[in-house]
Length: 238
Image (cartoon, rainbow, N blue to C red; front, side, top):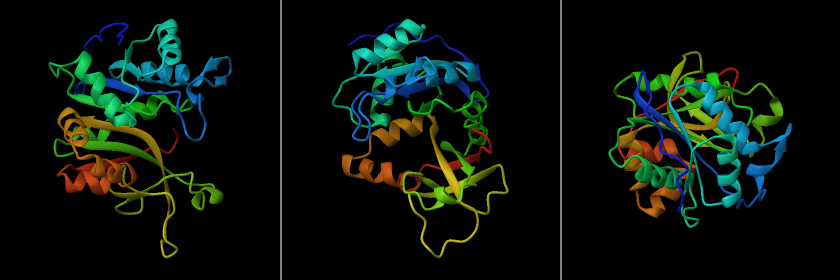
């Protein structure tokens, strides 16, 4: 397995930060999605550039696929090859970290989904804000849903948070594709990015496989059961 280059240490308010972007060609809904051409560049290259532009830490792409590895390497990025049998992004992130940072110098890890070409550098940096509170272990982003069609669209994952979304940071209670009919008040579109303390991602990936499947569907609930504290930062524009 190849590592194109070792990440350099950078620092941010949460200690040394690394952004890891897991990506693979296999997709049940859209095989080959990472290489889809968007304005003359593959999707994964756009995501990598947004992460670099956020300027919060080292950026690393991890993938089992030569096509993705070559794409990022040609763009000048750092890539770690991980095993094809790792089917979850969190497992690929953990495997990449084990290879490039066995000494655990990076204290904060951002797991950025490789299919978010339009995410802004500001939103990526915003995901770190909840970790300024020492008691918080995991953070993610959500934006208010303004399109009524999205509220009934199961393809849009909704973040269930404490309160009405007026606060900049709120406690995450659940993630659902559809909210129950009795739900009132605003709805929030969950954005596929997580910021972990290193201890939290290590704990998360050590969960038994059955719990990890549960965690993928109800990550806030599973994390709370494991003792982790989860917060959602608002991102009106992402």
